[in-house]
Amino acid sequence: MMEQQAKPAPLSSEVLLRVVTTGRKTRIPHVVVVRFVRSDGVFFVLAGRAASDWVQNALSTGSAGVRLGDYSYEVAAAIEKERGTILQLFSRKYGSSLVDDWYARAEACLRLTPLAPPHLRGAVKGEGDVRSDFADWKRRRVGYYEGVARAFDSASEEYDFTIRSNFINRWIRERSISVLLERTRQDDTLVEIGCGTGAEAVEVSRHVQRIVATDISEKMVALLRRKVAARGLDQKISAVQVGAARISEVSSSLPGGKVRVVYSFNGALNCEPSIGSVSGELSKIVQDGGYFVCSIRNTLCISEAIAHGAALQFEKMAPRKKQPIMVSVGGMDIPSYYYSPKTFAGLFSDNFRVRKIIGLPAILPPAYLSDLYFRVRPALSFTETVEKTVAGHFPFNRFGDQTLFVFQKV
Image 1 (cartoon, one colour):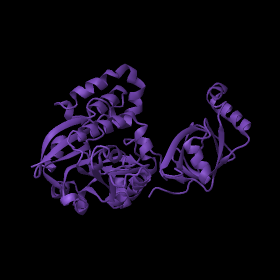
Image 2 (tube, helix red, strand yellow):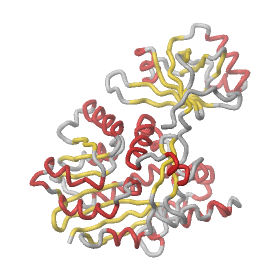
Image 3 (tube, helix red, strand yellow):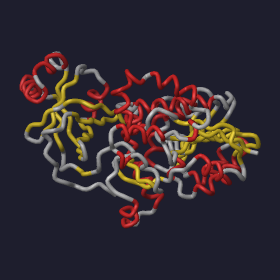
Image 4 (cartoon, one colour):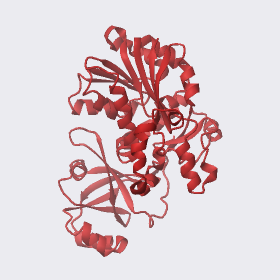
């Protein structure tokens, strides 16, 4: 949708390069962020260890992907023998002190030669960093499911790296999984809605008998299947391409057609326009007394308002007021529907009762402000202890970036 050939913008201000290689055995994407120099259109990077996976991946296939801002390149990868010349270029760009400290003993120098003009795909940004509005989306006349699937397809290759490198995202994932595991048993088969690349499924599978992991994105599902094969988890995880509004279609893969626990994390349900049908679909595959553990993006996030107010960005203090809200996924802007806890709980009231509500996080900022928080974390780390204490209590559990629900079928 957003891929097109384009003339690159000036690169003099660019400091870091994202290199994407494919695992030699696993075929799973491996992403690193490295410093670089560019000469005559060719990228040069230095690696501390020649045996590093990303180096060996690139040299084994002779290729890699390169992301630089909004631009994406396919490159040929090879060893550069003129290491001394490249070190001089690094010194000019980054300073001799940094180069002496970090790269003087680098074991490998790689030459990454673009094979074709770059594609302007859109940089992978934070969720709140968008360039279009809902009116722009409607003018493109893209079907909602098609557009969302494309965006998550685009995000699949770098998705795990993006989550792992974000402190708040890691916090949210760990908290969500811990709440889920409080409701599971070792003999359970679970269903996951919106599995992405399967990071949660892989972790949770160690504690249950089996997981049927579902997602609307073909590439997300394909990547999870590669993970499953590489890690020998064929008996533990099955990956299925299906959306939340048709989740009952997996019943034939479930023991007796039903399970005791279904879960959905990280706002997957915010990208389901037919959210009103999800409760009925779930009721077909959740046993009586069983649980649905899920998180959704909230319409009001107090920590977001405080953070932007403190930065005198008053126009950004209430960005979720108008729905749907545009979010950036895989360098593409897509509409997402946020819900207040009361509204979302009401959508499931015919078949489920709320047993617990948790702010996720309640007082820490949203994930897209993670870098800002990390800079001031030494002074504010006490808030993480407070977070664990108050996140499950009113009113803090109503005004987080996300809301984590524990529903029980009645």
